[in-house]
Length: 221
Image (cartoon, rainbow, N blue to C red; front, side):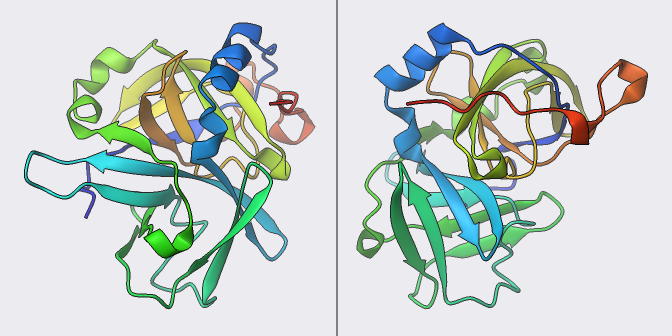
């Protein structure tokens, strides 16, 4: 089981127009990072998930899992027998009837579903819990990027962590409906530091109305 504090949860984000970062696009392409990211399709709803291998202490078994938000999939009330996920345009199905570890936490808006060999998902981003549990205050102002499926379309956005408050990070990467469940990476690295949860727009801070904003152009990787 992934401990409660093993993933930092990003609580809110802003919608803003940021230009595409060509160096970041090249980095993501060279490292083939989209193989860790999935698009969840539930009826007419799309969201994002990612696949991790949580590196445990010596002698303990590593955990391979799918991570997303509880408001996307709550395993305690999810009625479907399977989940359809698209990874690099290849469709996969996760059979929830099979015996596997499943955990959802509404308060943290976090869901963890164990991935089995029979799911035929082969790529997992390594997660070192010792990095995730480092001083969160030191993460403020760090450059980050998000790989996501806003409105069901592959997209990259980048920005900064603006503050840390009461166990949550606040960032300014461009996100919109469908971004829920996306991983947050340190800029030009393969280190996942947080799970994106949701967003809002603030006129007081000069941000435009969320509904009128366009997401960053989709990546052509």
